[in-house]
Image (cartoon, rainbow over all chains, first blue to last red):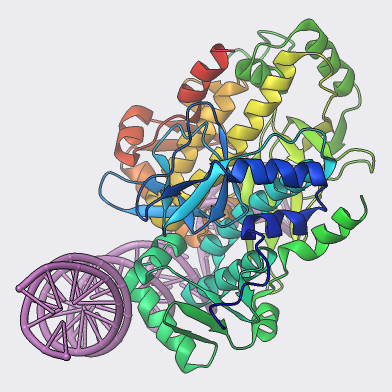
Length: 238
Length: 238
DNA sequence: CGCGTTCTTGACTGCTTTCAAAGATGGTGG
DNA sequence: CCACCATCTTTGAAAGCAGTCAAGAACGCG
């Protein structure tokens, strides 16, 4: 709220990883070290890593794994947020990684002997697969309204892990066109869907800040379950 | 062709893994050992692993990762074929693993010191992610005809790795309803789409055997690139 | 041969796209 | 401080792809 105030100096990426598993001092040092190698990528630019690194870590901003077709169509397959890992290897066909907003990245740190950091990364990979599964289900069986709200619910939970939410609200720095590429819709229809949701008092979105009015009711309606409820218990069992 | 003839006694799962990376004798022994613990799962039954094992290996048959909704809708998120690994952990919400045909599974073997086997499993995981990405792109941006043919192309390539193809043909033991749950369509529309493809001489499908008439032309039309062309080169660079 | 599952067909509905153009919005330079 | 431009959002009308509902045909299995 008050722009001058910053609760901690901890980066959202570290916040997220610490939420996935308690990280030891060695791991925190490794994260600190690697963050010193941070690099900025401007919006709309492709995200790349130095040739020595095959895995990167997002420190801030929004990026996406995207598939392009020769006729101009595109589909965003996965959104990358602060604290997410991304592999640069593979990508045989036209799968690219693109900054949706200005993004800061760094190479993934060596895990070393820190079991907490290793567990956090392992958990991060498990979650990523879960998000891919969910996105498939979303695109396969949900209509526009449900696709959008389901994704917003998931994104809110993901941002919450990184400490980037404000209650039921969070910053959503995407255009409706990007949302369309993500949800397998047209921007026109995303626009109409948003109007519906605003009219029905499901959400507010202005000035880049989105707020879900009643996430609980929404989650019930969508059969939505937070990805982390189950996994957090497992982590605590370490 | 001649049913009495079997080229080798090697299981399709071993064929696939060997294609991903050259496996040493130790790895082959481990695979042999673990296959002795094989277990059958009847069609339509849920696939589970003994509590000690978190990762399984499909030896034969077709299985699927499925999401169910309370109103009866379902979406198949990923198909598991011979030689595929599957993790049983996670699955916080209603993600289950179901046998689409009779399936044989076993626990994933310990990798031990066999680098080849480790590489094969690593490669298998990389490919699985790629298949998830592709399925997202398919559901997000392709129409019914392209969805179906694109998936058939991919499935043919995957089966080819396990030595389960016959030129451009392969056994496809799924119902149209299952195909619909996989492609985010209704079985009625899958049926109509298949009729189109048969009429236009794109494919033949009878008696459980499907044949693509001109996979090359199809791949060109769909911007389809085999998942393994790029990765095989990388593997050979080990 | 009989029954259940799977496939096929028709008519109608509806969600989403397409095409086109008019408003906002925000940042930049004069 | 305002004009200006590019980008983004909004709106309308029409067309299309896929879904729904229902019923009959074909198939495969015991």
